[in-house]
Image (cartoon, rainbow, N blue to C red; front, side, top):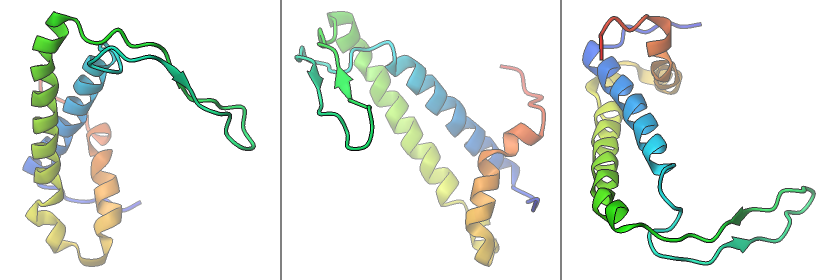
Length: 119
């Protein structure tokens, strides 16, 4: 397995991306699937599978959830900014052919070292 000497700012941006995505996904789970009231649905069974996608009725967002929808916008803006920071970092230009493997390794770089930062 190859090891990479990722710059600390790149490691930090990738870790922030992981954490922000996790926080966003956790927050999104608390919201109905549709901001407006919508009837549920069930799709046809998929060929060669017993899987049938479905959604229950959505009551829509409460007035409080509509106000909190700004949080979704903040998460999405932060995810976009962090994604751009990671993918356009100058480090990638130094690798030549091994960029894809290095990018995959970066996604797990935080697992290799204990996180000594608190918070």
